[in-house]
Length: 307
Length: 235
Image (cartoon, rainbow over all chains, first blue to last red; front, side, top):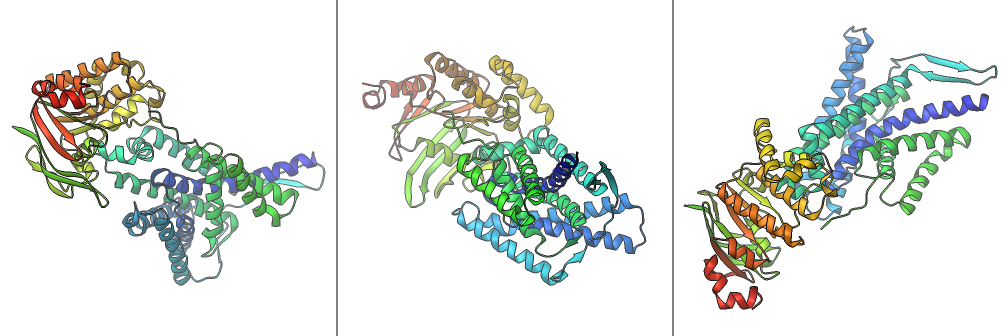
């Protein structure tokens, strides 16, 4: 019983982190799917989302607002708005002018953007950790007669539910809406989409905006979960989410979701059963294994053309 | 009345010139066929009209408007549609979704009307409405590509090798449809390796050789021209 509780605890922790990775991974995978580049500044968009949410929460609390759901929703909307604008602007400024050049050029531009945004936040907000208020406290505790107590916090439940809502909304958007359909068409054959009179630049902007908005949601959630943010907040999370996207099959949205969850769970299992020090070894080791045996990722499809 | 005019159009891929000053005229309501050997620049010519790549010099005029320097998406929103080489349907989207992409910038009611019209022309597509387009046969995909082009209410439709790789029975059907398009008042600019059938159907034809127009005449005269017979009609 003890063992089962301990295992469940790791599973819950893993799924929590994994859902957040999945939210960030969507941005990598959608952008890759549509223009075939890795947006290395995406982790910074997520970090900026976390900062914006923190600033909004602090501001609203200072204004005397006390109703928690309202604070969270306003903070979430602010974070999504700021991150989306950032995502849009980054594409316009750093990627669009070099689109269609050699693959390395947008990649370097993305790394430059990532460094720029990190340092900008360094300057604007300072390099120290800033505490994120624990707005959602408490949870359910389960214990057998033994010493170990399994807990499922309200914060974790919030992360699951929010992620679930975002993923459902995204899936509906991609499968049903006019723009979602165009996103899929553009990611398959961007030239053909322009031959149908579709303004592909707008569709590309839309994917950056959607990816950034989801990253901002993850920023608020993980900021609260970890309890602090700093300018490097997006670096490791971005790397992990990128791993998740590749693991699931870059370019595939369900793949990013699956990849995020697998990565989260494998990390927490490693921390729980081996040692926390090994968790990055395991997650990146997993990536190498997948790339060796299934280079397209778990749900990625090899390019097949029917002639 | 001209639908499309190309005046001394040159097109480059990087430093290599693929079209060396091509002049072509397509009148409203005509079917014009462009024939030529592989590598003569037929596809380049069609794609240059669509702005992909853009002409490096010369002028392209569509229904009286100079489109030489317009971006592709804008050109394709002004009454021109293309059935490209290799069909290029969106294989991961359903048949219906492909059609909707064809009418992307039209209104919902237009989409409904045009979709019904396409299903009338190709009942097969109606049967496969919710199937992923990539799982269909080559002939069905070609029908879808033509149907998708019709979704934008085009005045003129460009077809690049629509019969390539298809069974003779399907080819016959495709040519019937092309004739039907003209009856609907749509101007057709057709590239075909199947020169015999293409010239038979065409009002006029052009022969393209290594980036230059060698000949142009009525379809009938080209069919009887000994040079054309030797080079393109198998003697």
